[in-house]
Amino acid sequence: MRDVLARFKFRGDTALVELFKRDVQAVFKRSFCMKEPLLIPIPLSNERLKERGFNQSVVIASMIGKPILQPLVKIHQSKQSKKKKNERLDQKGLFQIKHTDAIVQKDIILVDDIYTTGATIYDAARILKDAGAKSVSSFTLIRS
Image (cartoon, rainbow, N blue to C red; front, side):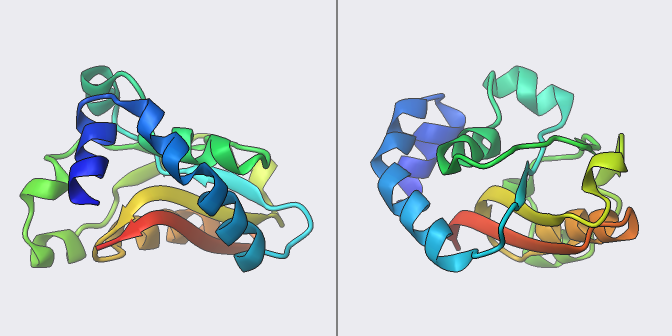
């Protein structure tokens, strides 16, 4: 799975995500029974987006078939994969929010490719809750 994720994420082989589409849709449907969840993919910094050419979390979210909003902005930092567990857990202020009206009193589901320590999801969820989201859950393709 590590090799597949690396090809998808770092080499731009986005067609690989189709291998998981049916499972992603089935697990999402089974896991989230809210009427109108709003999907928010974890953003990439502008630098990382230019480097990769796409945001893998947006690609995963688009497979689910629910409304997607992108109110978060990622603050550029060094690569997560290069950090030790303690460094990841100590991170705060990874995101800023650019508009809040669309998330107030909404059930939000954060979408990301991989869950390692939970620091990324936790920081994004905290910002969304502070901005008025009714609830924040997460959906990831892989748990490491």
